Image (spheres, rainbow, N blue to C red):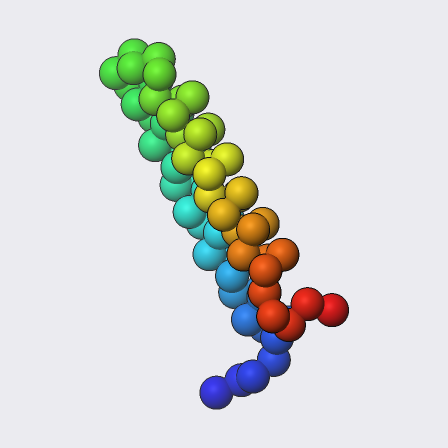
Length: 65
């Protein structure tokens, strides 16, 4: 098992990008396909919540540089 902090941080970044992309695609898809106008803003709120959570966890992490 690799214990490189940079590899772990990169994998977390990739996972975050995947989740954010999925939320964006679902919101835009619901808006475009079904005319649910509020789906895109809800996806934006999900993205804001997720980004704030990740930022909070990064600031409270023990191994800060």
